[in-house]
Image (cartoon, helix red, strand yellow):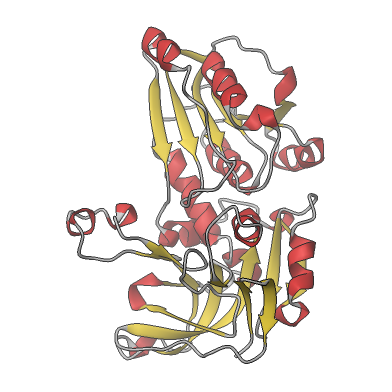
Length: 336
């Protein structure tokens, strides 16, 4: 099969890559489209460890599944996380915190930028009729935004700031704004503020925002794409904490895999956290089924987040397209 992968020589399109092996209860999925964004590009650049097929935002059509024949021919979103199922966290009902987690498209696990992928049946979520496959590639990203929105109580009177201007920040701002009209987004890319205007979300350049200690919740979003210093590192921590009123909450939302150069420096934050009795909450991943449900309910506007389209046959050229700083998400069409 055709596959776009990374090896010791860098990214390349292999027209004769080995087909995935399948055994019960694994399903064979014909890949329809895949989203390519900052995480995938970080893997290409070596900022995330990976050797093999790229791609973790996968939508496909089930070709075979012995464990559930009824799902054959269904269009599905693929959960990219593969917990072991036997560690203490998995058996305690916390598979998202598996100690031996594997992820499609990262480490040594093949992803979905290929004609076929084999995954466990439990990783498949049906896409309801009416949802475009292009939009469905963002199911996991939407799920993560929904998860963040549930970590802290947000009422109509709650003052909320989202720090960041990548896809995750834009989705979180959308989800939270449906519950609270006072939500604002602080970013460093003025070209993305037009999206906030489209959604009627208040926005401002982070370098112009005051530190008035008047926010109840600040969500700091870390995307894999290279970003301004004000959105990562010590500067971001100091700004976020400076915005919070006493007993406010800082939610730190970041990628599920470690990325070189992306992080929040909280080394000097202890005094501020203690003095203000602030809450620090980490946000990891949401259930992809909730992302699909949110898309089906019309809770998010995804069309403007898909800024480029490409074909798998274009190979390495599509990675150059996705790496353009003006792009948010590139959708790669694999099959018709």
